[in-house]
Length: 599
Image (tube, rainbow, N blue to C red; front, top):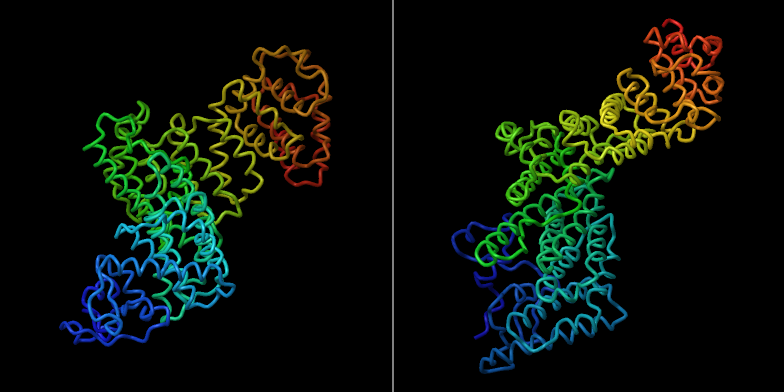
């Protein structure tokens, strides 16, 4: 018999219960509070043979549809009833997508409800219908996306965005092929529609529950997108999701950052449960298979971890969320890579075992360098490189990241450069690209230390490549060479490498962009006589260079070289030009000239 419309069964209360504020004392004793007024799209499907609200009908999984007693004196056959529900949903969907008036909120919500009803009914009851063909024919995904893009980005007053993501979750779970090639566009539309909403603190108290439900609806949708992928495509899907979330996590808008980092943390929870289930299934069924789920590789993982390392050093809610995400990612990679560590990874993990025991699970007082060291033993070389590059980019003045946190991550690399700084050319290129954008004192000190360490690790070929960026062809190279020229030990090593296997006659026969560096190299060599050094006209030309930065760099090099009495004698030929530098309008140039003369 049909259920009375005035009361809901306890079954539906479980899946669509009122908020705690609406519960009365009598409800706690077992009575059901009166139904609150409902929107039209939530009202009964009386024309379709159901006196249950649309919302409850979708959630009442496993129950048979009920018909109006006025139309039927006897209960309708369940199979026929489900077929009526299917036909009714199809009829409404086809009418809606062909309509020119789609902006009424009531119709939009009913459109989403009918899609969910159709997918669940066909899938769970085994009814005959090619859902993929139906979705494609009526362009359901395209219609959903078009409606979502019309939603205002600066306000949230309805459940439409929440219901949209719930509908996409149902589609992904029941007919994943309908989303093929469209997931990226759908995700981006959802991100833009939700992430740029005003901060929750600016939302009236009465609307905050709607904000929370809307934000939370994204998490099962992203999880469903991953779960519906073939095993071979899971890495790519996670890469695509995390890549965009990471961009939002670097936004200058704090509300956007917090929402993106929260989505990353929720996704890490899903990934952990996904891996646990996959590994358990693998151990039981596929022991002899080469398709080991524990070896899942996400290319963006190093960049993501570098971001989370830096963000974790704060004291706000985003830092706590980042620490929660790091905890789960550590479980994922430490358990999943236990059997695939290289020898150097094993040695590093063993060396930092005591630190892991002291800081795991991570707490709010953990420093980024400590967390990076704990992770380090389980990161592949490319991932370690991405961590370093992410920290370097975070040093830029325009970066929203905490500079101290980025420096802390780089301190990890400086403590064990042979393990972390294995790709010197790429790191040097990153420094060169970002150097002009880094002016914070602490960031420059950290960068200088890293540059000197990298210089000490350079091979002969890498030093030669550095000459490609010699001043004045590259303005950034001025700053890099200033650091190198400021340390006698580093300068001597670099310049000795430059001199090896190169005939003197090939060094300074013409004025070239790297003549300045080459002349300084000759000055640094004890075995080169003053006669061999010859006419210093090329070096003198740079002391008169129109760029103050260029003149300063040459004087810095001369200052370092002049610390040795033998080498200081070689530069006597340029003393008149150094004296002339005292008339320079640039204070730094004058001070450096005085320092050279003092030597």
